[in-house]
Amino acid sequence: MQTLTITRPDDWHLHLRDGEALAAVLPDTARRFARAIVMPNLRPPVTTVALAAAYRDRILAALPAGMSAPAPGRPKAGQANSMEPRSGEQSSLLREGGAGGAGHFEPLMTLYLTDNMPAAEIDAVKASGFVHAIKLYPAGATTNSDAGVSDLKKCAATLARMEKLGVPLLVHGEVTDPAVDIFDREAVFIDSVLVPLLRDFPALKVVLEHVTTSNGIDFVKDSGANVAGTLTAHHLLLNRNALLAGGIRPHNYCLPVLKRETHRQALLAAAISGSPKFFLGTDSAPHAQSAKETACGCAGCYTAHAGIELYAEAFEAVGALDKLEAFASFHGADYYGLPRNTEKITLRRDAVTVPASLDYLAGERLVPLRAGESVAWRLA
Ligand code: NCD
Ligand code: ZN
Image 1 (cartoon, helix red, strand yellow):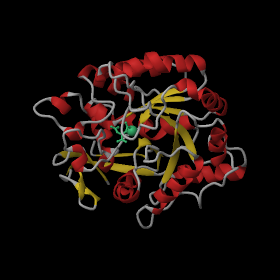
Image 2: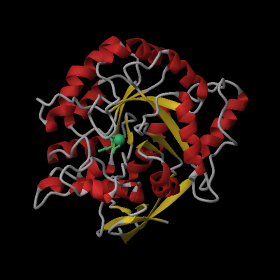
Image 3: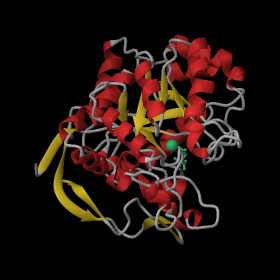
Image 4: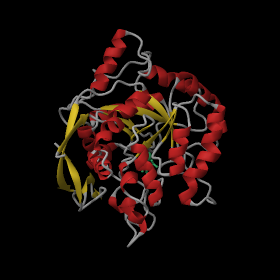
């Protein structure tokens, strides 16, 4: 197959950063994806609907010239959340939102859960129409997570409100206990946090983000339809040898860390299974070259420059290109209760050499995944 035309995809887990970094990376995503779930781990974190509104405005202002948000302006507070379109006016706004025309990009905002987020904030989320989920970072688990949750019990009232209103909880699924081996932190998190959480809130919508283990895949599969998982391209393409064998490769370092090959095989099997519980989330997470190539490097792989192309490679490698569209363009929208995009994109089977580094901040470069090597597919 030399070309592949699919419905324009969405990215259900993305780090856009802010300021100069935001302006540098946003065009890569906006060229490929109609919408993206934008992570709230800024400094300070995005903890309220008001902060999310301001961040959304900064994202829209940073869109490349000629690109805009799909709907004329942000839905006003008081309009129903898009998960429950009620009036004709709202659903036509939302259809436009989902149409995903080439000149449009819609940031889907999230809030950063803290020990003291009031349950009333969830009502504001539901009313906003532009905040779509709440993100759980266990305190200290990853980049900019020190304001994260120390104990989920403190969030019981807020979680109950989310369960009631159908607001998804997006989970960075790793324990932070220093006694737990880093390769086991996802599996231990599932048993010690997620299983009890779903026992207490059985109808809570939970997305286990960037699943990296067969344990995570089994957990998602064995849970109800309210539980889903996102998969990154780098975890589908690489195992931990790519991080540690033949020299340490900081640009392949992310959290959760790459796992052994048997786990990668389990992720691939889930991605191509056709199950609506699994969908695309790049976790593209830019860090300046100097912050990666240092004695204690930051976690995060930048993949937005080939955000859909890398998935095409992973699916093609197992003869499952026909499964890419549903995974990339349908399952996530269906889970979030948003309309599917209608526009198409075309990928060409034509190798592209990835630059050694990309423009990022003044005096700082960004090293993308596959730097200096090729990606087999190109966006037409
Ligand atoms: C992310 C980042 O840099 O913000 N890093 C990463 O390794 N994935 C945070 C995260 O999602 O864990
Ligand atoms: Zn992330």
